[in-house]
Length: 413
Ligand SMILES: *Cc1c(COP(=O)(O)O)cnc(C)c1O
Image 1: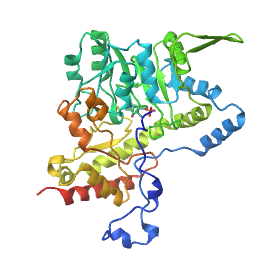
Image 2 (image 1 turned 45 degrees about the horizontal axis):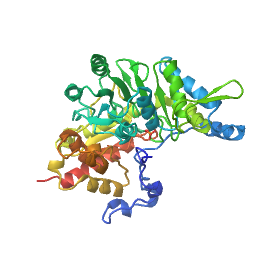
Image 3 (image 1 turned 45 degrees about the vertical axis):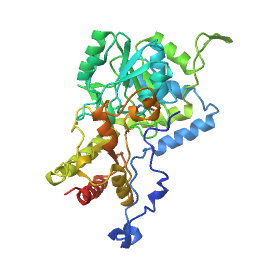
Image 4 (image 1 turned 90 degrees about the horizontal axis):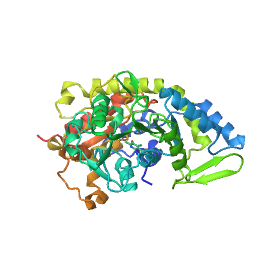
């Protein structure tokens, strides 16, 4: 399995003692006023949830059981009553959606090259071929205007990704899917809590896949769910989830298809049940922090350095991440250098993501440098700044100040 999507900085052990360059005036400051290391992200789990997990552990039923059913019911309610099934990752939900849609060898699936590699790996997993379409450099999501030209008689589906929680235009997407009879598997791993024109992501459309990985807006530690269209699909999802098994009566068991081992545990589901009531508050806090980033990084003196900010959307996005794109042509250092300096200043950052088609596996499958210039530029220069509900606007100020200082210091004359 691929590594987690948003790996926290190695051991937030660095949390208490970030290495600082000598000459940094904070080195001389008494340790009591040295700000703690600010990680890229961190889950917020309340005491009631921790107590609830303890209760599940003591209950005698710790794997898939009543808590998973309860979690699925709550998720279904959130998604306007659509059928929802929970799984042990977001990745497997997309693979299962492809299988339910009957997509396999000989089929093509259109997706974005700027995503967590899971998005296209699942297409390879079912034996189909991913077809990448470049991103819109402003939204950083798949450029839907370019999709039509990529459709062939073999195209069966499209997997759009709501990068950082900013939804892909659902009207355009579903109109095109309808016109070309394509299945849609929304990779909404990052957009739980986002909306499209007042409707919740997940409450409409075709398949919708969410991830509840530790760094997503709500978590089950590892986990995910799939929103489906009807009970027939939900039944298939249950079969693919656990070895293809169908049980009946007291002792009946049948197996008709090759399933996997993708069931969520009750322990994990209990974490999710404790997260759901906080969703609105988490989203509101993320929006507040994103606004603070815009205030600081949107200042003319900072804009003049060439930093590219995300779309200032406060209607649809759940602000899963705040991502800037560094001005490669104007900087004397590369992204890794910027990250190292921010780390030395006690600030964690991340990369989401390198362009998928530049990975060795995908190069071997035939993709080349230059195929998707916007995704490649973003892949080299995109930088995720800290953003999580337990952060303060003061932390945002600190990040903005440190980033601005690094950019100023290394701007080409
Ligand atoms: C997190 C993520 C996934 C995969 O989710 P897992 O739960 O880690 O399997 C897929 N796509 C995107 C865009 C993600 O961010």
